[in-house]
Image 1 (cartoon, rainbow, N blue to C red):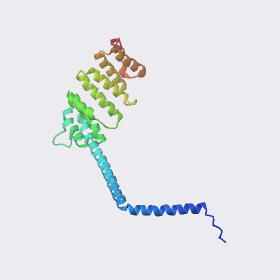
Image 2: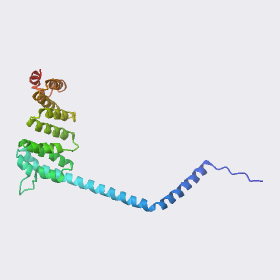
Image 3: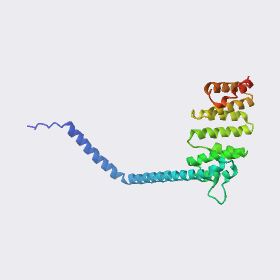
Image 4: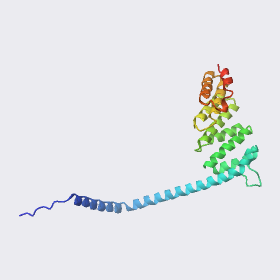
Length: 228
């Protein structure tokens, strides 16, 4: 007489599958061990390189911040050429050198804006345009400033259509920028200069509606009359 079959519980089935999976995993690892270890080593190298790169970039950003602090007083006082080139015989290296050495950091990106502003103040619009256009930092207010700076360069070259477009872009970067009404008014003025009175009128009307308390709308009515 055959013995009665023992009923296997669900728990035992699970345990048996787990054991099977374990030994299959061990066998798979042994079969591909060399490739797995090589891959793990490569991954470790990549992670280490990333950590070192990040740490170096953070250190460079701090150095750029210190260098900016040394030169900013020259900029504020209107000594733009010294602010650009630095002061020989001192530890003030100037915006140009900061950009060359640390331009890929956030503070290096900020230095590009100050460098461009300095060139613009000296009437060197091509140089200013170059650094405004090169800004790629992550701060919205500086993104707006870069676009507005480009617009000002176009305006100085009497490319009023491009200037208007860039001012409008600058005003759209962030709602937090208190200069947005100014940028829009400047866009409208450049549209007037490019004989686009209808769009200029739309912009001036928008400014009056959206920025009624802004100091930048004081002359909007005068420009509105010119857009008729």
